[in-house]
Image (cartoon, rainbow, N blue to C red):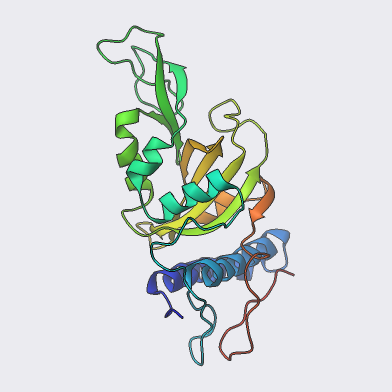
Length: 257
């Protein structure tokens, strides 16, 4: 058995603060119920996947058994290439992730200013309009990452910490932030430390044929990475795939109304 994780509890508490600030104003609205549901999901997922306690501040806490170190890749989704990426990401293996990146071939621009939505800037030895290999990335803006910079991009997204799996879903095929569907089949969402304001940070790895084709970090809030606007269906659902809490006092996960 493992002890409660301070990092995991901090994620729950930070989300609880976010919920409590807005819940009084939106408690009877669909948005309010959605926020409460996602908070429950976060804590449930923390119990399921990070071996942490979730719930009251006193009494006994529920714990779960962590995988043995050095074990074979876990079968979380039963999709081998996705499970492999999950292992790399939760182990913060940025070199491994860079090696399993599916780079887009995009025409560069000799005049790109580096603003959101701009094409990649051509290098001095590249002609305007020449096709170059880049990784799509986004936060509040969008941009491109060259292959040699990919490890640093993953390292920054994962906050140099120990990411924890939050959800895996099949994305809706609507036009994405890059103006075209990149063809992602699955999206792996991880919690990754905290933002500067203390709220949870996270990263979404958009996966096609076992390779990351889009590296996305949250813009305003972590839960936007799993909003109903982007999720077609869950493979790993933060609520449904969490174990039911036992009868230990001090642990209560309330399902969404």
